[in-house]
Image 1: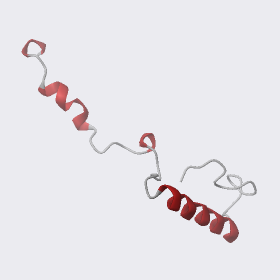
Image 2 (image 1 turned 180 degrees about the horizontal axis):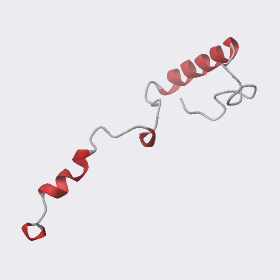
Image 3 (image 1 turned 90 degrees about the horizontal axis):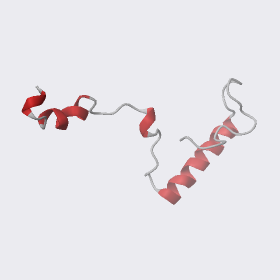
Length: 70
């Protein structure tokens, strides 16, 4: 989950693996968020993952193109 401060103040990027207590804190935070919001929060946002239908984006326009536009 992409939350501010998720890695904690003692675990900056590039300092190795998080400690077991940090992993437990992250899991506890995740369970609490799931209790409050349910499973509606995605792991990634729409701009972080590919669209499932890249070829279909122009499908409607191509299908409804006027004949004089070739």
